[in-house]
Length: 346
Image (cartoon, rainbow, N blue to C red; front, side, top):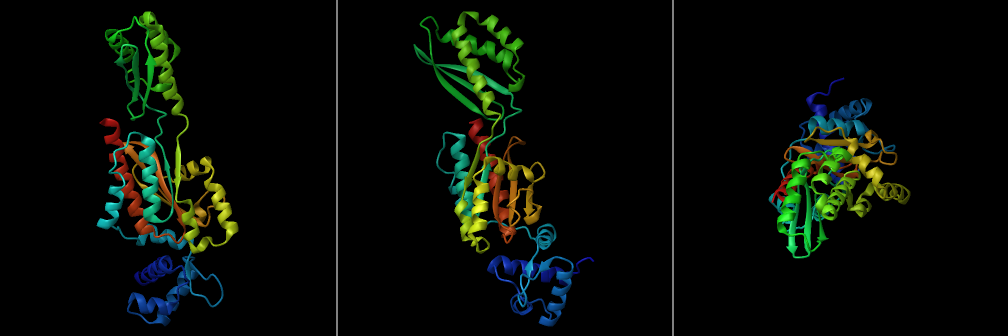
């Protein structure tokens, strides 16, 4: 049975009222608050049909109705409007990035703090995934007569640096030559494609500077090692306690124990089969992680130059303000993509 316009309006009213109040919704409430132009008796009939179709349910006898997971899904897919952030909300988000930051971890922690604060839900941010990065360049920068900075940069924006002690025989010209040789051989090469054969070729050309070459290769290897494990940041865990659905301590303990596991957090972010730049909304029983069936998650990706490098998400009750939450996550990921591009291309 396809929902006609009146059923859609009644379902939309039930969901919006329940999101706002966390109380089961009756026909009289809808008739008074939403001006649908029909009597409470007509609304009751429509609610009976919606319940039979599985879009709403009655939590207990003599109560009003609440949305089911199916109802929320229909709302998100077919009824939810496109909301725009207020100037105040945009100001909160943009203002959170005003301070100049020196490392990617700070950017991601700021993102998490802003996201959990503005939504009042739990937020997750996964750091850049660099498993397919190519080396942009290696540079040895002289600091003084006895020290140089080894700088390794990938095309995804991952930057690693280390101070190296120099032998007395090495000068600035030598450092330039070492950088040139390594870049000629390694620039544009995927980090997981730097094989022993290639290393031997470079080693042969730089045999006079074995110590420096090995230090630079160690830096590249450290960068490679960082690719295998993305960092996950969590914020706003205690926001769950503000939701009426989670007043049951047993449910809260179960959920909090899940949120302590990085593996679970990554699964949540990766579970949404969203498009490359799209938003994924997973509702209630759609969650494949045991223990999250009373929650909904909204996830999205952020990028550098059109290339997906990480994910952002929020976790809340199924009675989530989807319209506002989707708008915030979209704005956050779009702005985070700009921040990351500026951060790594400055």
